[in-house]
Image (cartoon, rainbow, N blue to C red; front, side, top):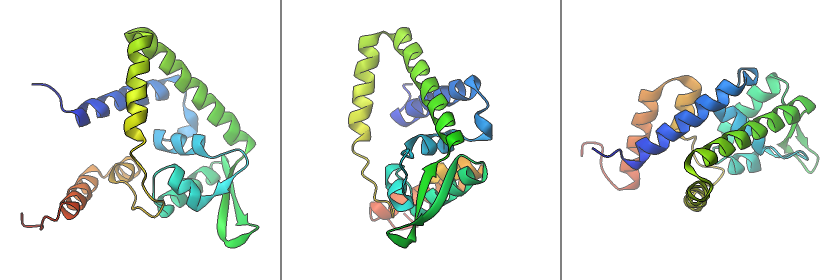
Length: 176
């Protein structure tokens, strides 16, 4: 039987995550936290905007920022233009780690390109970029269940949340 696309994408991400983790310890950070860190611009950004860049809720972005701040990779400060908002900036350690992560990702991409051929890799990457561009989640969107599962290890609850949200989106009642 042919694998469905969700399983294939999951399997590819599992390979990527394993290769990324194999390259270094990354200070005990998870792949999702590393992705978040690499998206923080050097000149800083409001946490709400960062949530949008990372396609997660403001609360989720706040949790990631707090973890990264505790580990010394980012700093959080009140926005000088709006004291209610916080600005997140990478620290020197955060910049170094982000650069290391991005260099490792580039190396993984080079290896994958060599493995399947540059033309096939370029076509795959272009298709993934096109599909990913469809994700225009607002910064107020709820945390993605897979991010919750990765952080908490509670995959069952994340799956139940996904099913409930999909049913609600399609107008289905719980008893259906």
